[in-house]
Image (cartoon, rainbow, N blue to C red; front, side):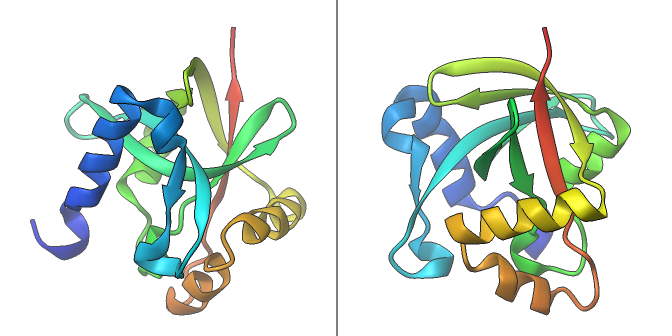
Length: 149
């Protein structure tokens, strides 16, 4: 594995901090990619499409209806992130938002809904617009995570 296929150490560290101290880790210091900016994050756990093992990723989120919206940006890389490929195979996921744990179902927002969510998510993390320009034509998916009973 190399580059975009490896899990960066800051991701592993953020997941560990979130599990240890969710209130501290919830507001992520996004200065790695966006200057001085703090953004709310959740933990998304998917089932690995190849391994079948749980895979956890911290993601910036916004509230959307009774659920949450996340952006499959991969920092503007031309390919989708692994977590997105995982939900294409199995949309049943688990999320942690601060101390609340939910089982959820992931779905990709349709064009009209995507536009509305994108506008809201850019308010939270303005760098998404520059990520979209970097993709080489890939439309960055917007994903809605809807809690299930």
